[in-house]
Image 1 (cartoon, rainbow, N blue to C red):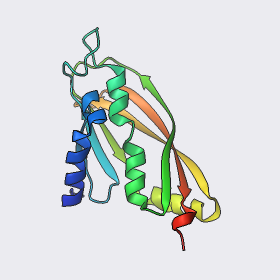
Image 2: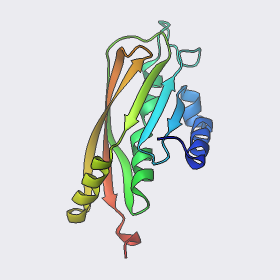
Image 3: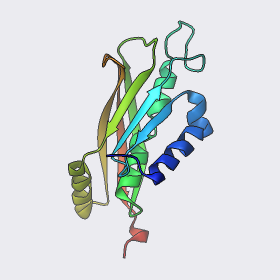
Length: 155
């Protein structure tokens, strides 16, 4: 699926947001339905640690808000989405640009909506790999996200 004008503008705004920009991450692509986002973490002076490899904090900062933003946009205003927990496992030092690809399939959105018909809130855990251009995994992160119904906006 291609980017829409709306998601292209969101990508530009995301990349200009100071907290995200200064950490070194770059959003490369946002699908028009918000169900896929691709991120790069360039290996540069901004993201290098004292050992000359990519700083773990830059890796985490680049992926931190993505699932919550995707779910907020894909589910719409009737839901409240918050990050709840996170972990990251560093597998291999990176000395090149690294990438992460986030996807939320239709079936996952349908499951969330169905579960929230019977409950006021749920948590979901998502995993994303941070890889080099040739597909070598450098880190794996887990994000646990709270999703609830916003009863004040429901009729």
